Image 1 (tube, rainbow, N blue to C red):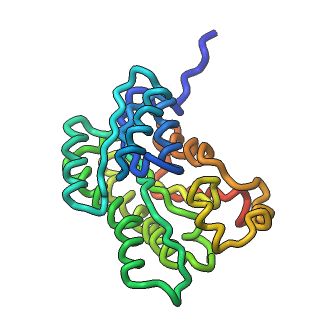
Image 2 (cartoon, helix red, strand yellow):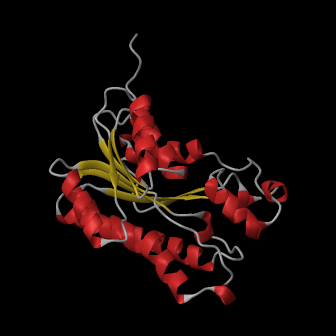
Length: 255
């Protein structure tokens, strides 16, 4: 008997992943490639983009993956990226590019606030706007935004970062209502501590990582945990899900 078809594949889909050169974005890009997608990976560092493209080709030999250098806080770079994507529409977009810039409120500068806002909120929203204006998100497509558990709980030293992720979640709920008429879905993922380079920066404020690990019944996450959730939200397995946020925290908020 033939195996039942799975709705979790991404075969034949074009998926754009920002922040694809490191951390969660890199893991998501590779997971999409392994699940059959043609991946367009976006990043700011040419050398890391080249390594990412090599990794994508190794993950899915023969696929026509693309790596694009772009600073998504710059209007010109966003426009150039949109030109490179067209004219074929995307099946999905994962907005993974972001920064933390940890600092207690009493030390936050205006520049700090503007930089975190520009990268974590303005860039994904303005890129989404540009894609929608050019009809570059296919009917039945999926928009996935990487938020954070910091949007849901209080954590010392991450006020600016938490605020941007909370803003992103609120905006995505509204976006979901606007694009549903196109058959497009929009959702967020809110991971807690995941073993990525960002965890090293967080450690300076959180303190002992081993002590913090004790607050997670299932331990810290791995990049593939978030990548698998992103694949789910991109695939037709989640066709009835929009305007929601999936919290991924290893049991942190129930312990």
